Length: 362
Ligand code: HEM
Image (cartoon, rainbow, N blue to C red):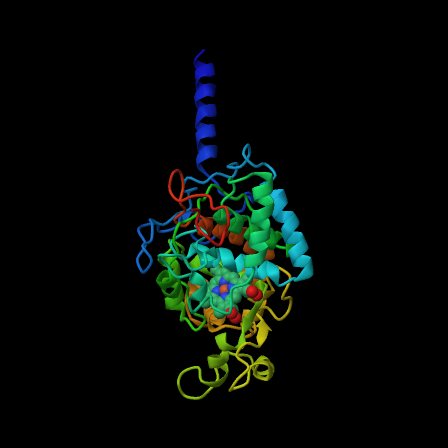
């Protein structure tokens, strides 16, 4: 009897441990502060932020739509397949939408709202204007989901599912994705201007922006790896080519031939909307080439190159480790995406499930 009790107690303990750990499906020994969890705490800065998510589920669950809309992910994936085969860059644009959503008052689909009666759309902020793409694809996913499971799947969860699906369809990792986010009834132009890091950031600035969201150095480097796909406009890297430090000189960390190539795409005057790949080696494939390029001085944005050139030991080491080991990058990327996706979600009776992602319900 005593041995049965011991067995039972061990089993219960195991179950408790299993259910309280691991947000990620790859089993990998994370080397850099992996178990630390995000700093948490309460956000600062514009936009009336909610408490920030940490590595826990923040009330979100992978099986959230298991009964109410079991086909949700299949519907998302089928729309994504069509959209990405028509326009391979779309994967990158959708991945970025989730980031720009989560960094502004949490992952609540505020980024998708057009102007409302009481707020101005985040689409008009400096980081987003003439830059964010993919809103029609999100609309298409939403309209198919409304047909299959009316008023059930939130726009915030659609953004999270589309970010994961886009990563997978570009050749990147998958991860177990906690769901159950609800949609906000307001947007924050101010929050969007204040919380999204600019491309000319120093390493210290980048860390500060990420720490404000409960994210650490490992998250900064792994999530920057999203720049393994997609494009950037000349205006976001022009300063590096012509006047990096106010002395009319280019950024000395730029590799020479890359610098000359970039100047043809991005002249000193004009050409601001010309675009260049963030990963010139494989702009539509999710791989670790981004980190290899940084090692050879071919990061496109200042914010990319400073992960190495910023002289911060931890981020430098991570760039090297991810350049060396694609699987290590993939496992960290999935884990950090879950952390980012857990930033300040609305759950329970907070927020709503929008019928149209561009406007709040009446
Ligand atoms: C670390 C700080 C970051 C900075 C400073 C930054 C900055 C930028 C800039 C300036 C662009 C080009 C925008 C344009 O030309 O209009 C861009 C594109 C992109 N960013 Fe970031 N980003 C950062 C982090 C992230 C994160 C965390 C993700 C996602 C997890 C991400 C995903 C992307 C993607 C996929 C693109 C290409 C989008 C497209 O081709 O449409 N970025 N980023």
